[in-house]
Amino acid sequence: MNLKTIHFENNTLRIINQQLLPHKLEFCELKNLDDVISAITSLIIRGAPAIGIVAAYGLFIHARNLILNNSFSKELFLIDSKRLESCRPTAVNLSWAINMMTECTRSIADTDVELILEKLKDTALFIHNSDIQTCESIGNNGSALISDGDTVLTHCNAGSLATGGIGTALGIIYKAQDQNKKIHVFVDETRPVGQGARLTIWELQQNKVQSTLIADNMAASLMQKKQIQLIIVGADRISKNGDVANKIGTYSLAVLADYHKIPFYVAAPFSTFDIQIDSGSQIPIEMRASHEILEFWNIRNADIQVYNPAFDITPSDLITAIITERGIINKPISKNIFNYVN
Ligand code: MRU
Image (cartoon, rainbow, N blue to C red; front, side):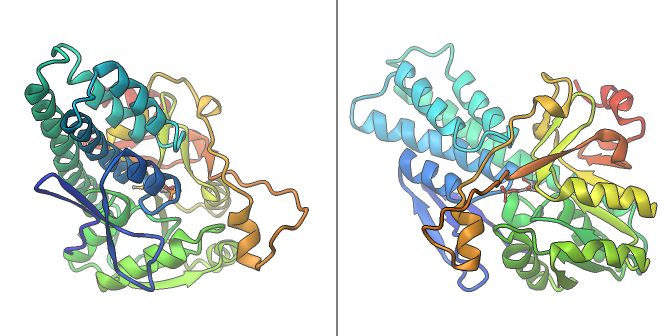
């Protein structure tokens, strides 16, 4: 397992261009804040933890560019970080990472640019390195829930392409495979932009995990035929009561899992928890452009109204457990969550 999505060396940030996968494995360099904003908005980089890490490095690069041009001020830096924060409003890892980056310079004078840069770089590296460790721990904790011979269903991509490490939902599968458990993974296409079809199947193949691609509307029939033993997905934001925002379509899987009595697990780091908000109804849902749906059918310039939310909310009572780096939060999640948050 050596797929690394985000590379930072010699103050240079390079990421896999996920728009080109699975046809081409190509890296692109993000040289300034506009490059970072455009990469996050256009899903060149996506997945909650990965967005946070890239935003952190992006802010370091932005501060460095401003300093090299003699135009750095913390006030300007704060304004620009708000611009970055608004690119994808649901994934809380973005604002979490941006907060860490702006906070670490709070007590330093504007003129002490060397120290500001040092702090920003250390913080971005910390965010990245701790995500690598976090993924390992989530993988180890979650792999105990998978038995030899299990068939797992997943949605979207919560693997190495979405994190700094081995992934959350997929990290669990990789760890189970390392333990010599035979696993088969069914992968939802994940319409409208196909993270499952373009990214997850590719990633699983790179890691030699047996997998089968299905269209999103085939999951129910597989469950009815008892061909799925458990479902594992990632998360973009988890509220205080354990409600989960994740890729659109996650909620319908949770409802189906409940009906068919199949365990439904969410794997997520604590950087994805937002305990400032009480429930999922307060999580902002990102609306995406209509072309993501229309262009799939080659419909252009048509006068068609499109509804395209990127995420939905799964209520915590439909979730069997949330697998975190600190352990597994079992039911009742809304109560047990407090044993894990600081
Ligand atoms: O729109 P995306 O591709 O950024 O959505 C990603 C997801 O929904 C993932 O499941 C989530 O971010 C967790 S990634 C570890």
